[in-house]
Amino acid sequence: MRILGLGGIAAAVAAIGVLAVPASAQALLVPTGGGYDNYPPMNSPTQSAMAPSTDPGDAMLTRQLAAARVATAKYATNLDQAKEDGYQIITMMMPNMGFHFMNPNIHVFNVRKPQILVYEHTDGKWQLGALEWVFTKMPQTPPLANATFGSFPAACHYKDGTFIADENSKTCPKKASTGAAFTFWHPDLITMHVWIWYPNPAGLFSSTNPLVAPFNGG
Image (tube, rainbow, N blue to C red):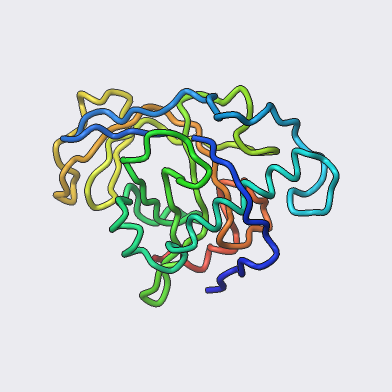
């Protein structure tokens, strides 16, 4: 699986922010959007984010993507490092997306610290494909210029990556059908995928990626 080089991307940067998971399988708390430090409101650029442009929104997005890439480079092909740093599985392979791993210790939305890492798995190896941030409602100001969003229903999550859709945290089974223990519940979420580590012809912010279809078998 191809790894994209770091060359050519500015390393300057600034942070933005979300997510807290209480201990002992309590309900997951997530932000409601907003609070992006000192960033001014951004207008959505009309050109490609990585194309040459004089639009200040484009320049800011380039710096933000650079910051995210540099900060997550250590996880690109090293899932063990991600786990050591606190990321834990929350879904098995989702078609045309990947395996999702979340860090419950990230409490604010920060461009350098995505709450979720989306991995592809093939031939016994792991490749980071996308980064993901989540919100309980649509942000009034997109945290990244030109961003588009997806969604994920309220669900109970389990230690082996199994999850069960459920609008009520109090009705989550203590164990999944696989026998895995309950870890946490979250409400309906707005999701923002960013395909920084694997090319995606569907777009930088698309929830799915046709190029990872060959890896859907896990």
